[in-house]
Length: 407
Image (cartoon, rainbow, N blue to C red; front, side, top):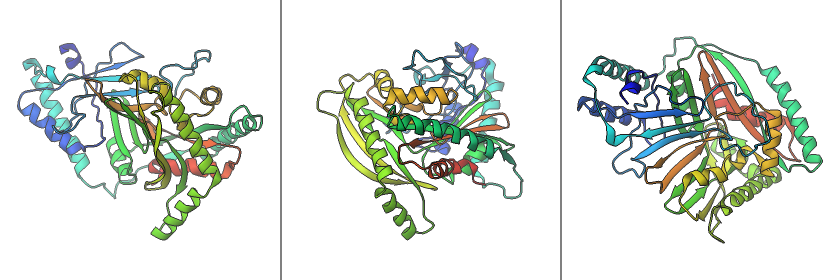
């Protein structure tokens, strides 16, 4: 513990159902009371990365107050054993486990200077997040659109061919944009946050960074019940309430969008059936509309009574999400492996569970940007079915990316 503390590599923040100001004040009180709450950071790619997670605070009333943060990649459990693994451009570890050592708080007198330095860093962070964005400073970013579009058209045509042959019914294929920018990560977070109302996740460690504005909850586990919320069906927002309602009705009357959503409900039900008691998987709510800044989605809720409260087993069965793969699920995953680089954390999940393992919530890692130095890797995906049109699918991809690409 002391060695990890001395060789600490960076900070990490998890922004979910609480905001960073309360988390900052909570940590500041701990430091003033000469307590230091330490979180260990582990990765599959190296035994122990020397890093501490310093901000993760829930209120005393929260059911997640004694939790640990977990990050899994798109296919961390390697369902496709016969397919050779590809490298991922962001070079982020396959999975991350951040352990809550709440009951092992300590302070080292020898580390007084480092501790003061960290408090100073947190004060700077607080100032950055609490001040308005400067309008005078010029930020730049450059992006190659034509090359990405050509790659997407190539992959789209291959999948349409597979669909015509009856190999798959639907397949989720994506594209990535690599952006060069001089914008600081925290400024980018705040800029994006005002453009979207999804669950906000910010994780920074060493020189890596994940910023995620996911609209989708993969699974919520409460005692012996599991809840899944598949999202499929996307349309842009209207510039007025009337136009917004027109787009909503258009999406709900679109046979392509509805068939895609029903297909993903079936995938979620099949995933839950393998870990649930007989006849307990039910669709509680169907075809709800959830609105975000740039897009609106069709969402449903599925509930089941799971056999044993083993969260690792639940995640192995249901991930990656059907909304990021297709139908049939395994065959779609094989095609995605064939056409895309390793997705890494994109399409995986980020979430937290209680130490007692009876409560947990995991979000699908979509609407995400992965930062390395002055480069941002932004990914999005859309579901291709027989009735899909390339122009509409490509427009959907760009609408999903707008949270990051909007100047």
